[in-house]
Length: 128
Image (cartoon, rainbow, N blue to C red):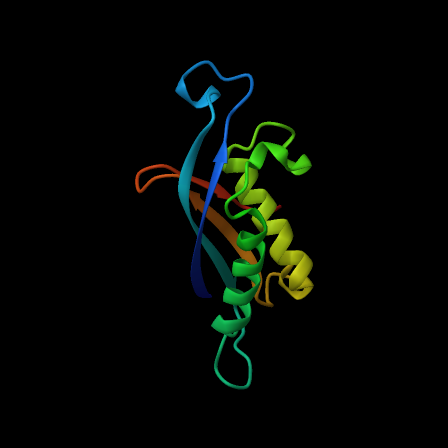
């Protein structure tokens, strides 16, 4: 099995409804995002997936939410948790590179999205 990973970042504000603590107030993070692709087969050039293609898609999705109030985006249902952000980014990459949706376990597929709110706090989304 081969794996590749690319990184992007964005800054955004949010608050969490139905949460009782500091995070129910408007605040922001400098998020770090990692997209992981894995698969069993390499292409003719010996690559699982071109880093450039994956970086471009990840950056495009992160750019959509950079410097926004995440609560204003319907996808998050007024609760833009790190978990929901990870799923949003996964869905955005799949929309841009549909071939990364897991189909057979042999081809390259988007395995996981990690979203770090801080260096110590990470949420991971793993598609079914």
